Image 1 (tube, one colour):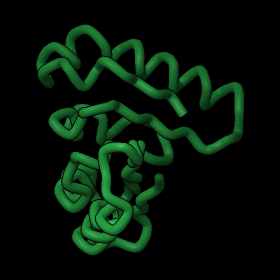
Image 2: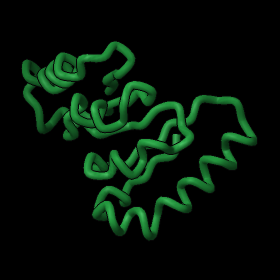
Image 3: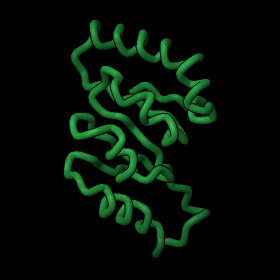
Image 4: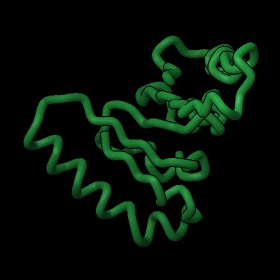
Length: 117
């Protein structure tokens, strides 16, 4: 998994100009050197889905704040997406901590899209 913690702060135009080329080179090199599934994750990257839709990766990771159904629609039927949640127990009541994953999965509408914590 290539985890981009800051790229999601860029607008699509700046991401395409400054970051996407490096991402493509990195993923191409990984694709040549390994046979493990490649996952590309951009923290807060829902605005970048069109930019990353054609990356040579197996899965696009999105954060829990991104609407999985919308990301899935933009990525198209051939590119699975995976939503990820980093839970902070001190910020959630135990009873409501499963609400985001359940809602996210229900809205996704495709079995190959997943949600993990």
